[in-house]
View 1 (spheres, rainbow, N blue to C red):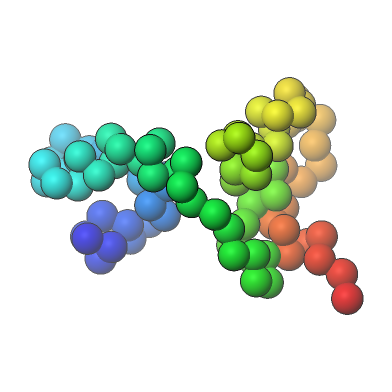
View 2 (cartoon, helix red, strand yellow; view 1 turned 60 degrees about the horizontal axis):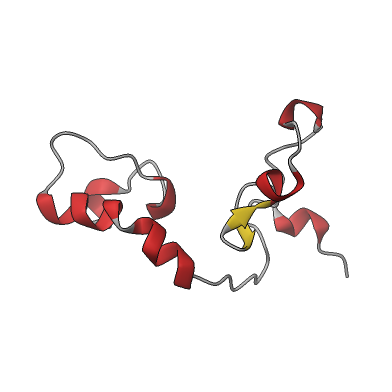
Amino acid sequence: MTAKYLRRSNFLEAILKVGDSPVWKSILRNRMLLRKGLRWTVGTGENIRFLWDNWLDNSNLVEILDKDISMLSNSECTVSEFITQ
């Protein structure tokens, strides 16, 4: 399924398409339920978007802090940019 449906995006951001299989459509429709049980393994932090990925209560920091993203200098920064030695 990864090779077929996730070539250009990750599972949590995949968009449902008309020609997708019934199984894949069902999986995508139930992502919110899956998200509730997901937890991060930060590691290097290169794959976790600081502002857009969920941190608390299944919400991202933009939603939690109610910030206008146009005011942010780098809205696509990753957690790795905040990790220091």
